[in-house]
Image (cartoon, rainbow, N blue to C red; front, side, top):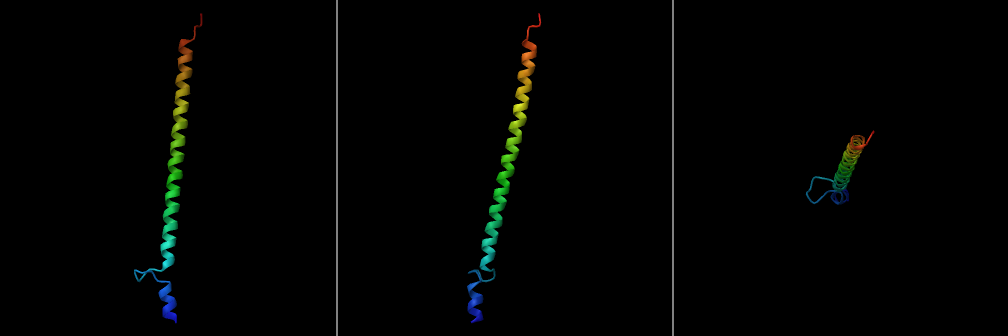
Length: 69
């Protein structure tokens, strides 16, 4: 009986428990999710810095084109 129960929890490969497959899938999906969140944050920060640069360039052009006379 114990051998049948043990065989139910062992993967077809013969040495890894079936729960290991699920936990590695969960670990992989959380890694992918964290990676995508990091990519989104870096892209957001880069776009914000680009926006600041464009605003400074716009303000500098407005100062240069202003007629003080």
